Image 1 (spheres, one colour):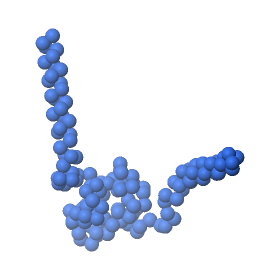
Image 2: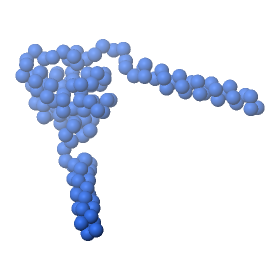
Image 3: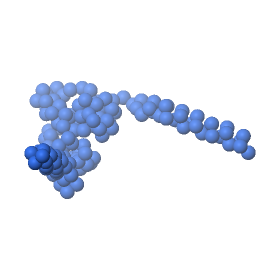
Image 4: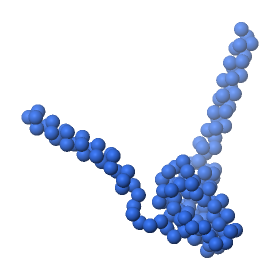
Length: 145
């Protein structure tokens, strides 16, 4: 019985390893990019507004890049959407609000203050206060010695 388990375990390990190494191949689809994903708007003022907004929006796939910098398909789709809406006359603020409503506060690098995002705004101040407290205690101990 032990012999029959070894080939099954080997086959399972081979399938798992193959899946791990091959899965990135399927990450991008073969569909062409959205129409305005890599094409600038004809009006320079509209393109400047679009570029400014695209630099403020986070790529939901890459997480560390803006949609202006990312080559992910979703970022291209979001760039095309921003340019289409800017060309249609929408304001960057209304586009940002729509994207936040659709994808959540995470889509913007400057999330609005709310109870959900409060830790993002309060944590740096809290850590700064703790650091100052620890430094003051450390300096007082050194003076006392």
